[in-house]
Image (cartoon, rainbow, N blue to C red; front, side, top):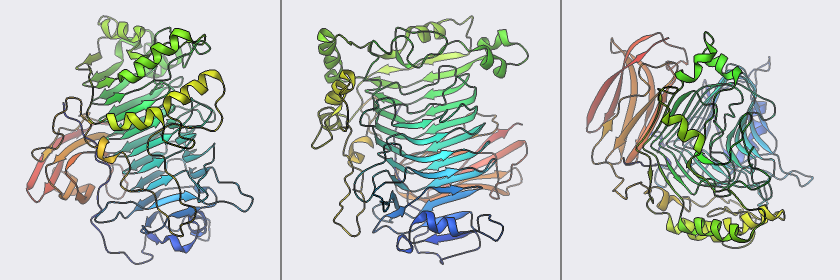
Length: 546
């Protein structure tokens, strides 16, 4: 197994477009606060005048002074620098009363399609402080489809993405979530979180090709007290979490394949949390990166309405070819702490005991498959360990001291992480450090220390296949080149262009939602997907079944 994360692709279009076209508005950072510009872009009836907003300024940041509320379809895309690949940055402004807006985007339109691509979303305001309740994106509409690709979420202390709409779907790819640490609440600072506020059913949650570095809480939390139809977490790197990386114990269908989990759950479970930490029906005294439980009656009924009692036997879950590891500095710290602490912690493993038993019980769980998972040290983590565990300066005290503050109840303003972003408040046109401080290390992380650069260009079989409503297509490139990945019907007519831009060498994932270029759902049938590069074209078939 050879896994690779590529952070940001280059867009094919480099020259700036006209300021406003029929469906696209190009916005420059000098034009004013982003919330005011998008908020004023309405028709007489109040509908959004444009559904695509293109950000092109790279020499300064875009600011928002209030939440950007979107009631329908929207695409916000950045044009990256052709040489450095830097994306446009959005950050909060400081309001007249000295406060900082907390939420950047709120998506309220039920049934809407919302896409964010090639953006750097920073929680720190222009005065270098962050809102402790900060959220980059909140989804309130029902049956909303949120697609996020090639974005950076930096420093969000509550959530990168929060949602409480019913039956929403999320497709998050090739993005980077970093330093999501709340200074005194160790269970927030999360990549995605359901039940905020309230409870919600989830349609699909798909994470492919992402990096999560220094996250307090969850890498993915559909919080399956309520039913989730499909959960996919493939080809990601989760590098240090304080608490459990997942809240998915009622997962019924999906995959957790080809990921690297390094230093996850390093905060353990203390005596006040045991045995009910993130458990609703069964207490656990062992804890793991992967933790499942039998379904609740309600979830069993949603999953298999015709025969609730048979639901357990139909759960279809793959956990394959993952790498997991805790460095000796962390395991030694646990041991030394537990030797003297009264509030000692229970330390995590790969799977907790209940989950191990479920995967071993083929008669009850014939479709639970676990294979190829290795406890192995991945490449290039030593440099990150040194700063992340022990801190650098100021409020960045490192993971170990933060742990001691949390477990002793003294945490207040300090944080932990790697390469914390510091806003230069004296610079007129400041932008974040680029490339990201960890980029040279995380790009090369691999489970077997092999050369991560592909030796050819390849197009993998889509998964799942047949599919409904979404499928993932992986492809790899052995050189920097222009690439088009597109879907055609069996008559050879173009249906959907998934990507058409300049790529750097590496491995990529694309998701097709079963829609054409107009956003319309297409019918069941056989389709052709083709990867075209200067080296030639590779084509394969996929099947959409409704």
